[in-house]
Image 1 (cartoon, chains in turn purple, red):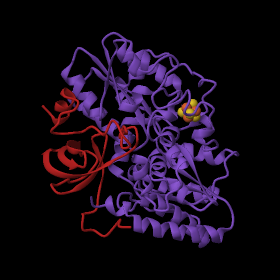
Image 2 (tube, chains in turn brown, cyan):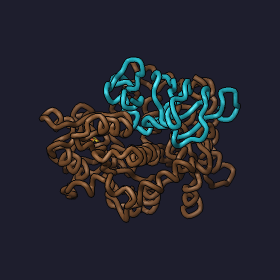
Image 3 (cartoon, rainbow over the protein chains, first blue to last red):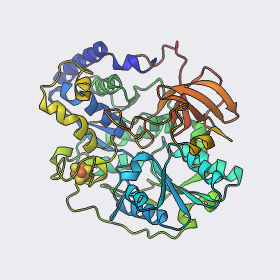
Image 4 (tube, protein in one colour):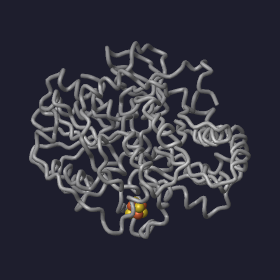
Length: 384
Length: 96
Ligand code: SF4
């Protein structure tokens, strides 16, 4: 398919890897790049990109998996909602398996709660229209890729007068955690592979503070293997040329100004919370989105009484350090033993974009085999 | 009844094929995963809905966030909503 196949081309990938080797050799020091987005993490593990990089270029995985960063207390709130008589709780597929302190939505469903998986918040609204006797709650998660879809749905619910629908918003913003990571002393980063689809909405301009205040380059990248490889090359080229700026590898989709219509819809429907809790990162100012006053009647947090309790992660869970990029998935004591994709203890093992699940699925195969010298072929081997 | 309503009636209608793979290495929840599909508009249904074809099949897509979507346009779809338009397939922009 156009715009996809070109970015899976092994010949172009091999050439870019060679250029990366030359650029990295010239640096003569260790360079640590964080891929912000879980989609990039998935691509990196699936295609064995880490194994193809020179020894002095390290990739660390960031907090951009929307499922991974939901704290347990918010899952408990969703479980509480699902337990209310007359409530139908809807959410995306991966959220069904995210552990709360005592259960998951999937278990709640098995126990009789009306929990339904949807592909789009608009599907949840359709359920509300079709079943007016139910209170349909959409458990909304995700970054700015997903929040516009929720916002459109809220506007539609208002326009259609659907009053048995509400949104439990757990939407988050990408820029505040980037700042939090940069301000934390423990991680000495040399660059960011910036999120691709979030940036189609917010654009590249909000990342300007990264080079300006922290002297670190950021390259927004797509999700095909060559996209990620090119982004790494662009970061290294900035160092080679003495530049430090925000660059855009994903030009076929991302514009500097983003999608102004989507931003306007977000501004209408949401308001920025003073602070929001992130699993592994703690409370981050201005990082969460709540339903705005204008749509207060469609806000589940106002319509229902929620426990709203903060819950500590299980003691064995190391998702926090993994999400901050200071611990590799396999360094967690329960990785692959007590914690697997079938029985996740932490959120990073739930979504395939989570670093632990991605590494569990693909990374172990690549360590077990010799690294494949041909980029993009290693993925086929992992697939077998 | 809207396409989204029809979809909600039947979570996996074969004709529309909205679901991402649920097993194997491509198994992801594409909404949780911040993924987006490239899709080509095949029919404009109403002011804010089109039918579009992606690798996953035909799907109803909300286009509220885009201006002037026409048959043949390529859009990037996430959670049933088009979040960006794409260059035409013969546009050199975005090639490696
Ligand atoms: S292995 Fe499980 S508990 Fe450990 S960091 Fe990963 S998801 Fe969290």
